[in-house]
Length: 272
Image 1 (cartoon, helix red, strand yellow):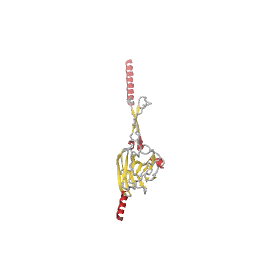
Image 2: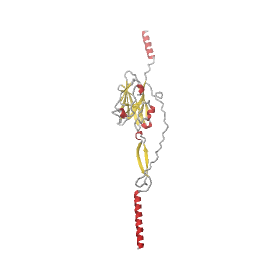
Image 3: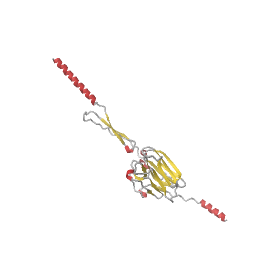
Image 4: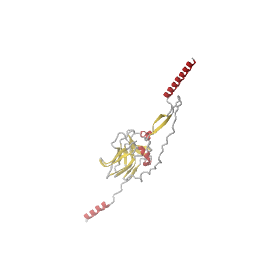
């Protein structure tokens, strides 16, 4: 009977449903005790360590309503956590260290491309030093096209994660936000973005330039736009409009003077 009782006890223990894992959501926002950051990397300064209940974040800085970041519509405003090569000593990777005791089997978050060109990103999950999961987000669109993707890593046990641009290039700029632990990031977690109406470029009226010496030469100012939001106006060129050419004008004047002199000479010879 004792053996049977042990067997039944073991069966009952195995039959008990596993305790649900504790979920958590990190948004880096003031509502979670993180002050709103500045809007640029330079103003943000050196690396900031962000301590939260489920994990510690290192390698980057907190930006609030980051400049030239249209994908903020897909994040939880105002703050995001990011890194860039032009920041103040920032890392090529963003690192997430899960707190001891916070059992984690899934980490999911939004990753944003800050570059002005398409870039591939990678995320790695470890159990200690053992790689247990990885994901690649290929060719995320450029920043001005709101390039972003969702990372969702799952494993029996996750203790730390590393996020990077593929190959850890010397030029990098990316951000993360809305980090979900033991749950998948979904539209129920992320705010529903509001799609702004398409913008229409209206060219400025031409600017006519009158040369103060000839009072005839004109020019039209043309402004060339750029797809790069950091460089919205690349150049201003003056294009001469059709009109008299100064060299031609001088030759015509010389011809008129010679013609006049010839006429006077003929008149004088006739009078003689």
